Length: 217
Image (cartoon, rainbow, N blue to C red; front, side):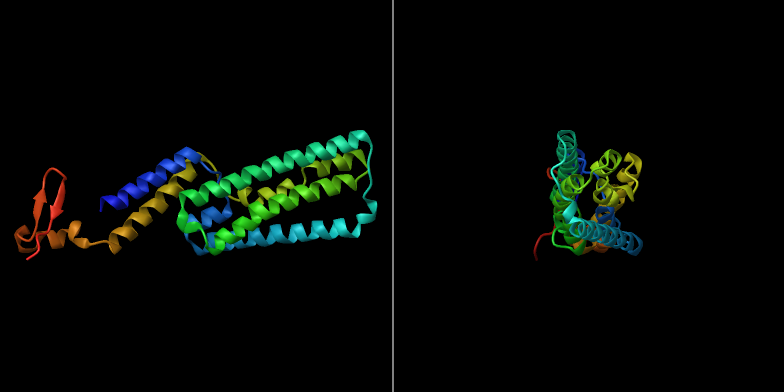
C-alpha cells in the first residue's frame, strides 16, 4: 500500500519541480468530466479552423509576398522569433505534463494537445513570418507581429491558472487516483472489516516495518 502513496508523492514533487502551465487538454484529463472534455474539443476545433483560415489567406494572397524595407524585415524577423519563443514554452509545458502523468501519453487528449502545442507552434511561427512579409502598412505589421499568438495560447487562456485553483485541481486528481488504486489493491492491508475478522488472529503486526504479515497456512 505504501507504493500507492509513494507514487503520488513522487508526482507531487515533479509538479512542484516543473510547474507546467496547464491548458484545456490537461484540465480535461485531470478532471475527467464531460464538460471539461467538451471545452477541450471546442478549443481544439477553434484553433484548427483559425489555422486553416490563416493558411488559406496566405495562399490566396501569395502574390503579395515581397522583400520589404530593412525596418519591415527586422520587425518580421523579431516578431517571428518572439512567436517561436512562446511556442517553445508551450512545447516544454507539453513535455513536462506528459512526464508527470505518463498515463496521459497515447490518449486522445494527448494527441490533440500535441497538435495544438507542437505542430501548431511551428506552423504559427512560419505563418507569422509569411504574413509579415506580405504586409506593407506599418500598423498592419505591428498588429500582425503577434496576432497568431492568440491561436497558440487559446487553450491556456480558457482556464484559470491561479495557484489556488491549480493546487485544488491537482489535489482532487491525486485523491481520485489514490482511492482508485486502493480499491484495486489487496484489501487485506487496509480494510477494517477484514482486519477485525477472527479477532485479528489471521495476521501479525511487524513493528520494525510498521506493516501487516499474513502467515500462510
